Length: 148
Image (cartoon, rainbow, N blue to C red):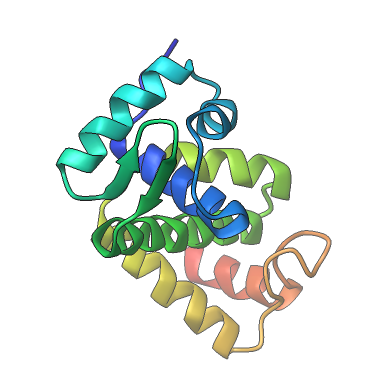
């Protein structure tokens, strides 16, 4: 069983907290597909780092610091998923791939991806997922011209 990162826990806590409020150990274990004892151990570490307020049998909530990081991770995930969808990766595959990539790509790279996507949107290109191929014919032609 692979070990999850602090970031993966923070992201999952943020998602669950938005839906249910205080996050219970069992809910987080189910979401992450890990043992409740692993969640309890990690929640203790996250509490010690100041990312969550956690009390056994009462659950956890993100602190402002933890919420900030979870928000950054969520934006990173959306950017990667949108970019992958834009280049033609099926949405369900893009979601999974974004989850795996987001913890290994630098902030600077993600910022460049965000700016690039914003530029494409500003030029009136098809939004990711809106055309059958993920990109408009015009975007493909312009990309081909640049490659020559």
